[in-house]
Length: 174
Image (cartoon, rainbow, N blue to C red):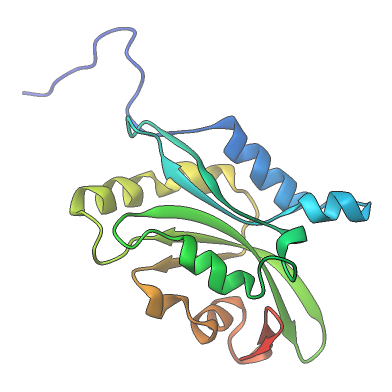
């Protein structure tokens, strides 16, 4: 027997908070012009599911601002990896700076963090909800699913960004 939804109940699936979409747009567009505006731009942001597991929200205090890099944070990618929980899943956006032999680039990366130590239920919910957030993040060129710190080393990230064409990531040779 198939259970039917009662009239007036929301359809199944996870919603994406408006603030998540606004942050993505601000990171993607990079319309900042003054040095003060650039310092406030986000370098990395981590997203999680709300307590009721019905909405993807910004995780409180889990961001890196461009203005913090070189001031309070020396290695932004290492700091970003350190912000990810050891025993639970997350989504994240990271504004990657890298170099090829020809040029310097900045491109957004989308991460699904699903560590081995995360509960199976959490992994299933995050994996099944990934499409909801990806639909809101139109134009992301690089996606990475990481299941542990070993998936987040500079060589792995360089491979995702362009393989052997990448000579440096976040100012460090690869």
